[in-house]
Length: 123
Image (cartoon, rainbow, N blue to C red; front, side):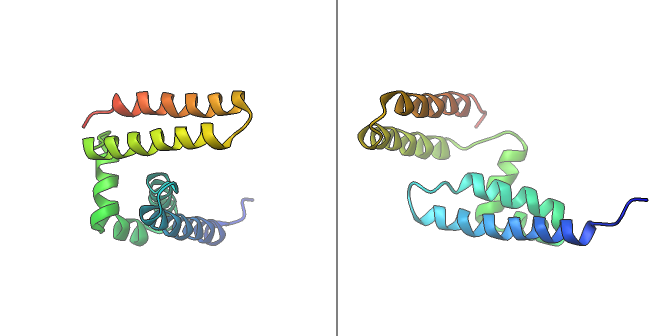
């Protein structure tokens, strides 16, 4: 016999959606804090918790546009440029702050790999 866990699952995904949305919106204001990843997580978890919350998020101008583009595999050039600039500044910051050179090289290599993947996405 399978016990119903839907209310708990829905509550946890809903909490994750709201928390991720708040962090994502804070990330829009403060540089260095990622916004796109948290907003993607918010929409994904809202889809699993509440169809009403998911629909509401997709209707929002900022989030909805980003999600519609993401679902069809597109990323606007402006977003790619902003992401590239932010990652470049972060790479300089990493080399200036992290004293362990191999760790800094690994982090910047991961960022460079992500940028290559990002620029290969359609616009």
